[in-house]
Amino acid sequence: MSASLPSLGYGLGLRSEYYQQILEQSPAVDWFEVISENYLVQGGKALYYLDAIAERYPLVMHGVSLSIGGPHPVDMDYLKHIKQLAERIQPAWISDHLCWSRGSAHQLHDLLPLPYTEESLYHVAARVRQVQDVLQRPLVLENVSSYVRSKADEFTEWEFLNALAHLSGCQLLLDVNNVYVSARNHGFDAWTFIRNLPPDSIRQLHLAGHMDYGDYVVDTHDHPVCDPVWALYQQTLEHLGPVSTLLERDDHFPPFEELLTELQKARELGAAALARRSLCA
Image 1 (cartoon, rainbow, N blue to C red):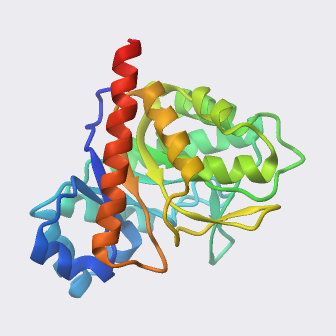
Image 2 (tube, helix red, strand yellow):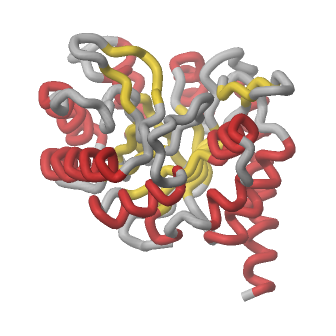
């Protein structure tokens, strides 16, 4: 793993359901990831809590609206607000998704996969460089879960991610659950995906739950992490070494103590994986 960005340890997604408990309890969480779009306004309760939490914990910004692979021009007004928020809270890095999510005039409110073609690769790489020039920092991009494939694909997803990191200088947010979901849906091997990514480009890992319907799997972020994803996570750390790890929950929010218990499980499984890595070094 490259040392160009800090390794933060084990974090949680910052959600409004837990604001009060975080400030009252100061839980043993190393860092929080904030959904950028929730704080792109001036004033209000959300920013009040964000400022208070930023005084106690490192933060990372994670966006859902950049549409880095979209056909329309990058939204410069949106980027201006992202940069202003970054100046306010000083995140360790800024991430979004390798996807398209915007039509001609409207947000589609979904993270749609790209065709993995040479044309798409150069299109996205140019847009990444444009965004990085505005933000004056590396952009970190997450692999999304997918349920359909483009017949036009010329690369596998991991080949596309490799080439994009090389061409644009972007970093990668490896969502282990998304790899598992897409592997189940498309019939490829999840470990083949992960072991073929460039280790020095991986800045962060995501862990989350999903819904398994047997014939297909849906990334829902509303359940605990399942055993196969935990196993894949450990295999990933044995391969990469320590990487900042984020536990996500976006619906069916459990009591905060349950989420902290799941984060502790990530710590323990991560420590065991890293110990095995040290023994094999």
